[in-house]
Image 1: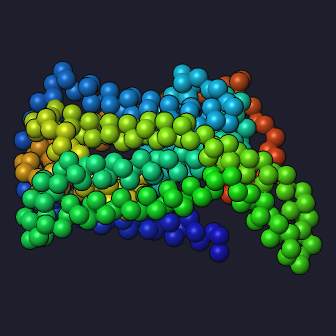
Image 2 (image 1 turned 45 degrees about the vertical axis):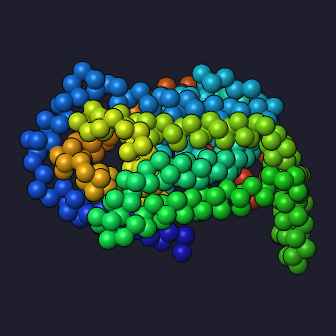
Image 3 (image 1 turned 90 degrees about the vertical axis):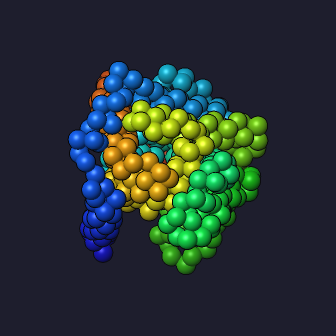
Length: 368
């Protein structure tokens, strides 16, 4: 049964990509390739500017991670975190459901390069998801508010009504709900100890023996979660850092639109980004949202009034920027293979962390 799971995931990803290619073909039907290339070439010597927002975005994200590590008593220099963040983003963009691979690789690299135990790295991944989703909900509401006029115009043109701004704003409930759900683990309650106690009452000798061996790890995980949750100021500061990273994605879109001949309008860019956020959630099964995200950008930008060739040029420049940073990320991952890499022993911890550590350990062996 387990062998079928990767095949099913691959089939789902392939189906999504095929559908996206069809949508992209429809969105770019009739586009003049020469006009598109002229729009790309219009960036001229300013084209390298397309690479800069990613540096700011990843720096803000790494800063949020550094703040969270500080609540666990780990002082990791930003100069060490940033290459890890850039490298794992390359994995995020190139692997199906890449966030899982990226989180495991982050824990592995924090252990091998920064001395952060795998268990704490896995807890960091959970804490980061908690706060990134909180920031994402705020970003969606801000974007829907700033771009309400444009989204309403698109809604009237495409759907014949004005529901799109409200629908986009309401989509913030999804990351907010997930954030609130994860946040319950950070309230200082012995959640994993309770889970282990429940498992220990199962009338199965093997289960009780496993609980006896690893219950101390559950207490350790609960302690890490409690320390992060108790650091209210630090978690809100980390949330602000993650929100800044989201906002710089809109800045990047604003810059790329301008480079290919569109308007320099941050409100326009925020409307585009929050409008595409629903598409991104569907596109997670495909590497870098391949096809799905491209079709979404092309259709939405045209619906907002950009010419088809400008929309196509935007997609090309955005993908070109990602290819450059993916290359940089893999170079950094290769560079982080070295004598300083080490494989620390894994202590028994709670189930959710154990799974992350097992994946991390495999990745450490590849990186080390």
